[in-house]
Structures are given as structure tokens and as C-alpha cells.
Image (cartoon, rainbow, N blue to C red; front, top):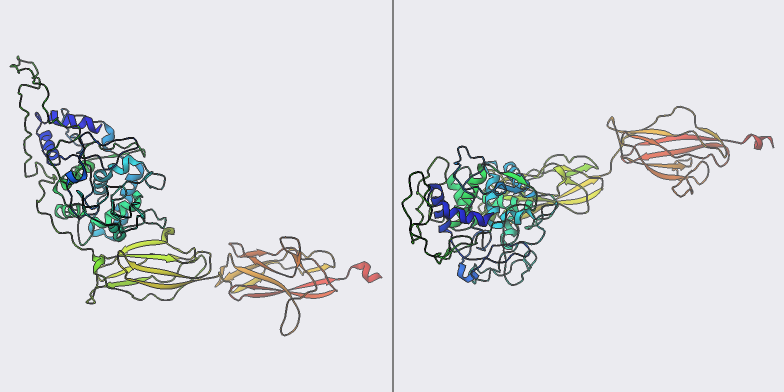
Length: 579
């Protein structure tokens, strides 16, 4: 579909002002080269240039590795008043694969929750994702959003691209000599180390995962104090992603296109761009564009008769497309971007030199409960001044099933104007013991840690719920023994209770005589650990009357200190008394 669009675009340019503007934009990005990524079995376009011919230079997220230069169709989806004369390209052009679209929208929501002032639109992520990787190769991702095969740019060896020596020991890009751009949003490993995010909550920051990559791109675009609802800040953000006016125009075109309407398509069915990729536009034609060698000379044109439709051809010279107006043709158009590339603002995180605790108290909670208070830190620079909009990641570490709201083990929050950041509520799991919550400024070694403890569920009261006396003849069983556990007046569920037959005396010990119950293997025992039901109730296993006649004591002890002693009376068998 994209290749057909290339031909239609040039034919329409002679008759349509909109088409002429699109051709001019595409002409500005003419450059040879194969697509950044190709599906299995795809090949580079005919006449593809070497990386050296494409030029390069450092900077941006991806180290100036190639990107797609295909422009969107001229007929934008759901655009009011679209001309019927505009070329038709098919509904799939505006479709975004389901998982990829979900990742963009989730990233927008997440960033809005931590940096609402940035006003990140998901359509901007979609535009960059289209240009960088064709929406993750048309949505070729698994159920978790990870690409089915790695999306890698060329080696950044200085031969036509930036020279970036290996920074990740090949962990992400498989190259231990030079770095390569990785994943659907094309992050180089060194940039990912600073901006990487866990967008799908699986505890990993994977540039090959579209949820992680989209959230990382969102935070990167929002660096500093940008407000992406303004054209100036949006341009600065895109240019910080890639220092190229051609790149900006291409992203802006898709951004406008997606803003006018799009729809979800199944994963793996997205339209993969077929046009060229470039970093340094040259004079070679894009794939699918007009040939550098003119076609055989057409027959001379003749004056059309009245009512006759003029046929193309008439001149042996190719017609140069008109230049687009430097001013927007209507409100909302991006217009001509500045030719001056602004210097990207440094990340606020880079200026943080200290991360200190600001009021976090003792972190203790009962299993299954919520920790009291919040974990709160303050980021400051070398002068002691607060640093706003620095990214702080809170991570639960250690052998624990405790997590933040939503079950996440790691969350990233941006500092407020006073430099403070608070972690979401921390919920205790069922594992008891100590663990650590680490707060770290993303991309730096600045961090601080907090010790936390999960204690066992407790009961401060145990009450027997039966009323009958517990008496049994030797060799028989006692009636069911049931109790209720509570803590501060509320039912105490899942509390450990130890039931033990004890001796009389000032210092009771486990009795080796008298009533007993059995363990899971059927062996007689006189001490057993049980757990209350969620409503605090507990039904003890069957106790058997044994030993000499008399009264015996069964002591129940719950976590938290609650204690209850129940008397069990063993009576002699009638036949024994008679003899």
C-alpha cells in the first residue's frame, strides 16, 4: 500500500495544491537506503546506499540510526470536507496495531499522572513509533508487547552514523563493539540506561517491549519543563529525539494525521512503510518515487476538445513540484519549523546530587495490611536547592511479596516543585520478615534505602464458641472444639494458632499423656499449629480421649499473644470400673 502511495503522490502533485505540498515535504527527505527494519524475507530497496552515503552525526535517542521517511496518505481519516479527488489508499493506513496503540495510550495516562503539566498526547508517540519502526514492524509483538524478534539499527561505528562504542556489553543490542538502536522506539543502550521504564509492570525495563519503550519515550519527550500542547515545545521535544528538520516534518505529518482519526487493527497486520530511510537527505530518489531516468518521450500533447479530460504527458520535462507555503494554510497546521536546532535541555535527574528521607517513619505492617504513612524523599542539587521533575524510581527488593498499589514492584515518580516525591501506598504480602525499598534517581547513582518489616497477622482475643462440657470416655472422641479469634474487636483471619496439651504447674510444659489429635500422616500428636479462617473462626481437629481418667488442659496460643485454656475430661470406661 505504501509503495502505491508513492506513485499516486507524484501523479497528483501536478493537479492538487495539497499534493504539491506533500511532494515538497517528501522531496526534502529524499535519501537512499533500506528500511530500518524489514520483515523476514524483505530486502533493501533497489539502489540502497551504504550507511556512509546516508551521512550521520551524534545525538538524539537513537544515535542517528535510520528512520522511515514515508509520509501519511493525503486523505486523512475522518477529516471533515475531504475532497473526493484526493487519492485513496485504503483503511489500513490509519490503523495502529492493538498492543502498540494500547501501549501509547497507557504511556499517556501514566505520564499524565506523574507530569500532568507536560500534556503528552499519545498521537505524538504514535507518530514517532511510525517513523522509527513502522509501529513495531506492523505490530509484530507477543501478548506482553515484546517484539517477536529484535528491532536493531545499524552499528554506530562512525561510518555514516554517530560513533558510539559499546555501553551495555551487548546486553540489549548483541553488539559488544558498538551500540545499536534497539526496539520499537529505537533507543541506544546508553540512552535507555537513563530513560528506560517498566511500562507493563513485569519488573523489567526492556527496550524491545512496546509498553516499556513508549513510556520511556514519553518521559524523554517531557524532559525539562516542556508543555507539549504548545507548538514550540513539541518541536523542541521531537528535535531532541532526532536532530533533523526532515525528521521533524515527517513526525509532524504523522502526528497531524493521527490526530484527525485512527483505529485499532489486529497485531501483526499494521502497514509497514515501504519508503526509504535516512539521516542525511541526498539527491537520490525515494523508493517508489519517479525514476531518475525519464521514461520514453511521450507523444506531444494536443489541445483537448471541449468536454474532453486532458491526458497527462504533454511535456518532455518533468514538472518540479511547487514549494509549500512557509505559513500554515489553515489553523492547526504545524507550518514550517525553525531551521535552528535547539540544544536539548539536560535531564533534571542529572543535576540531582542528593536524595534524602523527608519524614518517612517506621515501615511496619501486618501481613495482608497496608503500611502506615508514605515513603517520601527530596531531591536536591549541589547547592542544596530542590530539583523538580527529576525521575525517582521506588523499588521493592528482597524476599517478600509486598508491592505497591496495583501489584507493581517498581514505580517511577517525578519530583514536585519542592523536589519531593512520594511512593504509592505499600501493601504487605503474606511473607513475614524484613525487606528494603530503594529510591533511586533514574540514570544516576544517587539513591537511598528504607527498611520495612511485615509482621504476622495477630489476634489479641481467643474465645471458645461451643458451650457444652468437653467430656469423653477413654478411647472415644470429644465433641468438636471451635474458637473465634479477633484483633482490636475485629475478626482476625489467617492468624496462626498453636494448640498444645499441657501439664499442670507453675511452668506448664507439653503433656505426653492424655488426649491427643493426629497430624496429616495420622500420627498421634499433642501439639499442632493451625490457622484461622478469614472470618476468624477455627475448628480444631478431632481429639481422642486417652490416658488415665482425669481433667487435662488444652492451651491455644495465637500470634499476637492471645491465649485460651480449654479443659478436656477423660472418664473411665464403664467396663473398667466394674472390674
